[in-house]
Structure formats: structure tokens, C-alpha cells
Length: 283
Length: 273
Image (cartoon, rainbow over all chains, first blue to last red; front, side, top):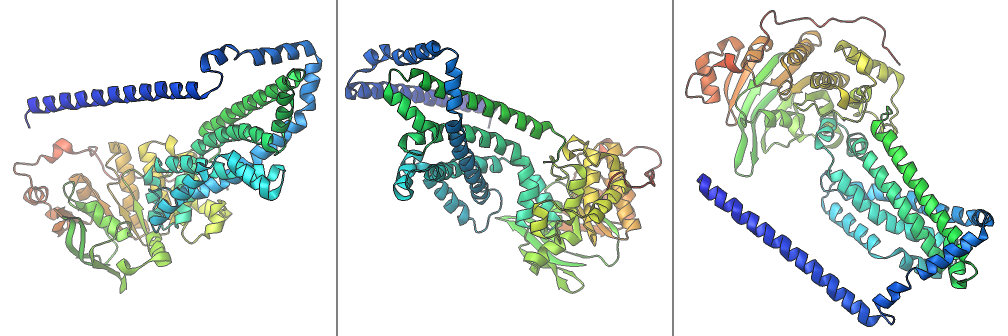
């Protein structure tokens, strides 16, 4: 092929690429506009009028919290046990779901020599199903069977976590370098040994950041599940928000606790990750 | 060891074409030939990293190609392999990488929790000391230079207590001084441990200097199998399919001067146990 011909082909490809990008942007814009129109028609209040009242409730809460003065912190302290319960649900769900996710991820990675290969497809579909149901639906279903307690919430969040983290973990696995694994294979290591020493050390830092992010998400999810009777901070929030005026300081205190706990998790996450990536410990 | 009619095809391409040769006594064999001649595939088939299409590899009347499961892994431990890209686990420290040579024969449950006994750690350190890199034992493998990493890989091979050693282009990505250290270490495995070392090489002078026997491959077949002194310029042209004069000295990476610079053997107790 002459240089000129290659040049023409590159230009043609470039043109096609630009066309696709433009088409994509137009499509997204169309979806957004039509979606907004549809929502506006269906909603009773209308988006623009509702928007003007958007800050009314938050400002109400802040005003009441401000009025409470120092006793605001006492209110916060009073809700700490509820926060601990929510964190417990989130923590237990993250650990149970995360452990299951590691197993699913290794069996669901196409590059690790899982035999027979059909296992990879099956495990991936299982993870899809686990992710497909919102926590809220699983929790409602389990609360119906097991009754109102933190346990159904924990199981619901754990199932979703296993599916979501399993997918992310398996994508990390598929980016792992194959050379170390081959090196171990050449020494006569079993599949489990190759995974433990060839893959796990490579993927652990990324696993950890995904895990901590998931923990954070799970704290919020567990808080929401309190609304349907799973206990914890969500139950308190439902009560105070339901009361509306008068309980504004309590609502503000609950939000403050949630925000603070997310901050702490975020800091903790970056601290642990830093240790793991640069630390001297082998793993 | 007897290899007969060993063949590997990838789709329509025949990477290794009915290769036969035998090794009667421990010797250092260099396999040379242009890229794509099937040198790597040959070694990978011997280690059973790649399955052969047909043929046989026999050692003491045992058919290596028929092994599976536990027995296959045991064979892989017996024939240690060294790679061009070292294939260490970058985030594990050096001594753990060496201990990996013993994963075979270590119970899976024990190894999952990284439990290695003191005598194993001592042995790993002795292997590192022999290669002059015991000081780096606690560093992560990824922080070492290429030459050091390749010596860690050789220490891991020694840890396997192998019956033979395969080396796939062990010095192709190393600087000349590191290359010499690595080749000296491999030669020492031949001389001191009395093992066969089968080594793919790109540089002819390396093959001439270190090997007892040279096998030349072209397009999957063996076209030369003799002592290095028979490797005349015309033979070399045949192996590499070069039309004109092939000027070796242009691509040579050897360092002029005495070749066998003995590695200083440091005799001292292991730094840690």
C-alpha cells in the first residue's frame, strides 16, 4: 500500500470516528431532553416550580440546628448508637459480600485458566443476577420472611456487594500481569497457589480501594434500609423527617453523623492503600 | 533424556517441526536460531507449559508428555525454567519469590497462609547468597535491576532442587555485565550441581563461550547439532538464513577480556532466619 493510500485511509477512519462521536452526543442530548419532558409531564408539581422550593427544607433544618446551639452536639451524641448499628450492618455486609466477591471474581475471570471455561460464564451471570436486584427489594423480601431486624438488611447489602465487587475484582484480575503466574506454573504450583502468590499480590491494592468505596456505599445503603425497618440511623431519619418541623435539629445531627463517617472511611481508605502500595510489608 | 518427533502446530503454523535429539549426560546446551524458529516453544513443551501436538519426551523410560495433575506439576518442579522477563512476582519480596520454587510439595492449605518453615527460609537465603544477592532478600522483587531479578529467578530455580534447568533467552533483556553474571551462574549449575542446562540464546559468542553443545533451529527444525567449534560462519549463515555476510561482532555484547570472572563467593552466615 502506498503512503498516500494509508494517509487517505487514516483520514477516512478519523472522519468516521468523528461522525460516531457527534452521533453519540446528539443521542445523549435527545435522551436527556425527552426524559426531562416526560418527567415534567408526569410530575404533579413541575420541575421548575419545585426547584424554587428545593432549598426550603434544608434551610429549615439548618435554622433549627443553629437554634439548638450547643445542645446540637448532645443530640448528635444521642444518635451514636444508631450510627454504630448502621456501620455494623454495612461492615458485616461488606466483609461477607467482599469475601464472596473474591471467590466469584477468581472464578469469573477469563484469563486465569479456570477449568472448564464455562464456569467463567456461569459465575458472571450469577454476579449479574446478584447486582440486578436493588438492596431495597431484597431487604423488603427478607424482612417479610425473617422479620424486622438488622440481619435481613445485612444479607441484602451483602448479596448486592458480592455481585458488584465481584465484577470489579474480576476486571482487576483480568488486568493482572500473566508473567508471574506463568513463572509459578513452571515451578509446578497448583491453581490455588498460582492465584494466591501470582495474582493476589498484584491485585490486592486495587481490591482494597474498591472494597473501601463499597463500604462507603454500603453505609448509605444500610442507612436507607432503616427506612423499611432494618434499624440503625435510617430508622431515626425516617422518624425525624416524618415529623418535619420541630425535629430539624435531629435530622441535621443525623446527616452530620453520616457525612462524618463517610469522611472517616475515605481517609482510612487512602491511608491503608498508601501503606499497601508503598509499605515494606510483602502483602 | 530422549526427545523424538516433537511437534507443535498453532493452527496452520508449525512452530516446532518433528524435532528429535537426546541428552545422555549433563551438559550445557545452547539453542540458537532466528526469532520464530521455535526455540521458546521447544522449551515450553519440555516444561509442559505448552502442550505438544505430537511426539515424545522420555526420561528413564518415563513419558513426560503423558503426565498430568500432580505428576505433571512434580515434573515442572524437576525441570526448573528461567524466562526472559524473569517472571517473578513483582510485589513479593525477594526471599518469598525464591520460596515459590518450593510451592510444589508444599500443602496448598499451608501455602495459602504463607507458612514456610525455618529450614526452607535458610535454604532460600543460601541460594540467594550463592548468587550474591542475599543483601536484597527483603526488598520487593520489582525494586531490583533486571540482572538482579534474573539472579533471583535462578535462585528460585535452585530452590526447586531441579534435575535440569531450562532458560528461555535469559540474557536477552540484560546489559552485558549482568548477562555475564547470569551466564556464569547458569554455567555453574552445570559444573557444580552437574545438571543439564538447556538455554535459548540470541548471541552466538555466548553460545560459543559457555556451551558444550549447540543446537541450531530454523523454521521449527533442527539444522545443526554439534560442538560449538563446528559453528563456522557458513553454518551460521545457514541457520539464520542470511544471504550476505553476517557480521557477528556488530551485534556482539560480550565484554572484551577474560570471560570467566568468578563471582566472589561470600562465606558468611545467612543474614536472617
